[in-house]
Amino acid sequence: MKITALHLHPIAVADPPLRSSYGLHAPYAIRTIVEIETDEGIRGVSETYGGERPLAALRAAEPKLIGRDVFQLTRLWMEFEAQAAEAGGDRSQTWMVPGENPIDQHARTFAAIEFASLDAIGKALNKPVCDLLGGRARDEVAFSAYLFYKHAGGGGLGGDEREDEYGEGLTPEAMVRQAKDFIARYGFREIKLKGGVLDPEVEIETIRALRREFGPAVPLRIDPNCAWSVDTSVKVGEALVEELSNGGYLEDPCATIEGMGEVRRRLLAKGIDTPQASNVAVTAFPHIPMAWKHDAVQIVLSDPHYWGGMRAQQQLDHFCHVFGMGVSMHSNNHLGVSLMAMTHAAAACPHLTYACDTHYPWQTARDEVVAGGRIPFVNGCVRIPSKPGLGVELDYDQLARLKERYEALPYRKRDDEAEMRKRVDPNWKRILPRW
Ligand code: GKR
Ligand code: MG
Image (cartoon, rainbow, N blue to C red; front, side, top):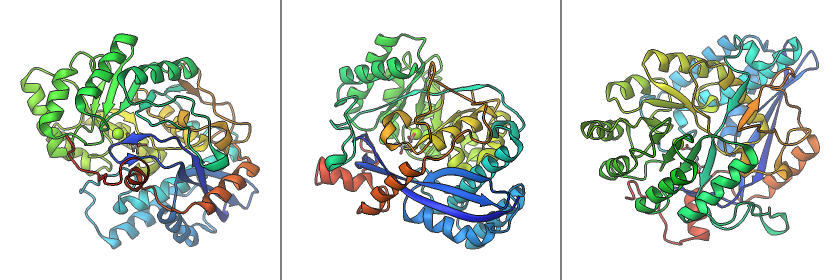
C-alpha cells in the first residue's frame, strides 16, 4: 500500500486560560492534523504539534513519503535518524519545553507519519492499531484528572468564546471544586495538579485539600515544570510525604537530571521515598541511563508524539522496565485523534500502569475534529473501540472551520510567556527556579 499524497491541516482549538510555569495558555491552542492518502484509496490520519516549525518539518518530509509502502516504517525511521545525525546536535542535552527540542524534531515528525501509517494499515487489515503493535495489555486505558490553576474564561475570542465550565481556579478550595467537577464528569480515579504557578505553600495546601477531600485511594501528583529550586523541591517533598504516597509522584520539581538527583538523595536521606517523574529532564532515550545513574527519575513520562511514535513508546516501556523505572504518559493540548493514538500506544505497553495525563477535558465538542464528536471516558478510561485503525474518522466541516481559525491567528507558535505578559502581568518572565 503506497503513499500517494500527504495532507497537512493546521488548526486552532479554543483553550481556557490555564497557568503553568511557562506562563498562560493563549485563547487558542494550535495543532496539526496529518492525513496520508494511499493507492488503495485508504487514508491514514494522525494529530501532532501545531505551528510553523512542525508544519515545515512535515512538508520537508513529503518527498520521502510519496511512493513509500506504509508497512516499511523501519527504513523510514532509519532515514529520519540518519538525516538527524548528519544535522548534528547533542541528544543527551535536555530542553526546557517538552516537545519543542529542535534536536528531536525528526522523532516528532516521524511519529506523526507512523501514527497515520498504522491507522491506514489497521483500516486495510480491519484491525485496531494496538493489535498491530503485538496486541494489547489492556482493553481500556486509565487517564487522570489533570487540574490547572486557571483564570476565569473558557477559551476562544470575540463571538467565538467557550463557556467557562470550571470557573476561576486560583485557590485550594477552587481546585477541589475543579477536581470534583472533573471526577463527576469523567470518573477519573487519579489526580495530577499542574503546579509551579502559586507560592509553594499554597500548592502544598492545594494537594492537602485534595487529599482531605478524596482520601488515600485517589493518587495525587504535582508537576511544577521545574519552577522550584532543589531546596524548595526538598521542602515540598517533605511536606507532602503522606499526600504523594500510594501511587502519587513528584514530577519535574526542579530543572535537570542532576538537580532531580540531588532532590532524590536529600529526600532519601530523610527516609522519604516519594518517586520522581519527568517529561522535561528525560525526553529521549540517551537521557535514561543518565537519569538512572543519578537516581533522578523513577517514572519516565512517555509520549508517543515526541519519543518517536508508538513503537518507540513500546521500546521505552521495555527499556524503563529493564532499568527498574516506572512509565506513565505526558500530554499537551490535543483533540480526539491524539487521544486515540495515546490510548492505543498505552494499551500496547505492559508496564504503563499509572493513569496517563490528558488535556482533553479542557477542549470542547465545538473544537473536535473527530466525526461523531468527543471520545467518551467511562470511569476515567478510554476503551479501545472495535473499529479498525485508530478508530476515528475526520469531520471535514469541522476541520475546515478550525483551519479558518488558524489562518486568522496572529501567532504560529505557542508562547505562554507572551500571553502571560499580555493578559496578567506586563513584566512577567519565566524565571527558573522561581521559588
Ligand atoms: O499545558 O501548560 C501545559 C503543560 O505544562 C504542558 O505544556 C506540559 O508539557 O503537561 C505537560 C507537563 O506535564 O509538563
Ligand atoms: Mg510534566
